[in-house]
Amino acid sequence: MSLADKKILLGITGCIAAYKSCYLIRLLKKAGAEVKVVLTRSGAEFVTKTTLETLSDNPVAMEMFPEGKYASTHHISFAEWADLIVVAPATGNFIGKVAGGIADDLLTTVVMAKQSDVLIATAMNTEMFLNPIVQENIEKLQQVGYYFIMPESGELACKTIGVGRLAEPEDIFGHIEHYFATENTLAGKKLLITAGPTIERLDPVRYISNFSSGKMGYALAAEAKARGAEVVLVSGPTSLQIPAGVTRIGIESAEQMLTAVREQFDSSDGAILCAAVADFRPAIYAPEKIPHPTPESIKLQANPDIAAELGKVKRDKQITIGFALETDSNTDRAGEKLRRKNLDMIVMNNPTLKGIEFGSDDNIATLIFADGHTEEQGRMSKRRLAGVILDRVFELLQRGSARSTTT
Image (tube, rainbow, N blue to C red; front, side, top):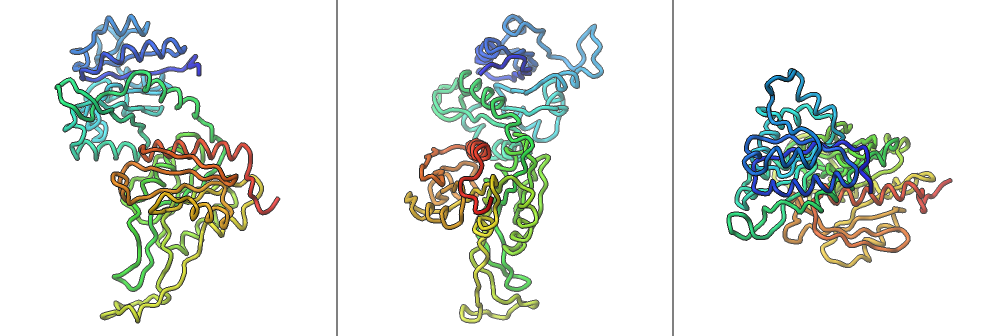
């Protein structure tokens, strides 16, 4: 696609992979984008201002207070100018400073004052990238709406083999193209998203629940908001930060979730039901701790099927998307759930697979549609999978639900 008239602010930090940024600038310019570069002092050790100014056709900015220039709002002007901020390569140091709210140079100050989305392409030594602190900082920024292009595996500058290589310029360019292709595609739409586990109280100290972290639902909420949707997130208990601009309704139990969902669904264009709702709840809640309960003394009853309830009442052009946790690759059960619950699409995944367990940042999914066709999605980050799902949501909303029960 053409990037004509798009304004890209490219941040370059101190990494050997900075040379790839030169190729990225050429790709952006060829596509019609205007590019301005903010170069850190460390970045200038790897690539020169002269090279970047020649390629971008713009002065390169490095200093918070450049000599001979009015600079009291230097950082604000860059933040206001950009349609998208891209940092490539981004070091662990840069990521840590942004995650910690530190703005001690021009680039981090511009990012703190951002008025557009930020796309961060990481590059560093394998051990640096896998450091739990770096991973925690990446996760923190993802939760508040920053986009990440994770590094590739291969031979690194330090002559070791592992994850850490900056993605190729063509791949980063592809992410930028996709960002603008999906920008505001959901503007004017309201999406209802459920996330996290439910907890079903037995007494004041015990409850029934599951291992859901809520990460997939929160990724969907963040991505939907980034695409311009009004997003209401009905969430069970999690430790996740609320994505910026998303309205969160906190609940505990399945019945509370059903009540909240019913209140929001009528005014929504669609619902993505990602929450891991407990199948059963105690038949009786004991206000005092039950002494030495036995299996025979705890009676359970079924919780409401929230997806099926919405499938009964959805109107023409409303859509419902469900999730199915299956521990094998057989799609028959998930397909049966789709039909029984009157869904337009169901996302089947298996959290028992290595690397995509409960609480992980990645997922592998199969998308199953009401017309019977399926799409296999390989391992990817949950934020990226959220983007794939919302691509399909956009297509379904354009067509309207093919399975609505009322007109």
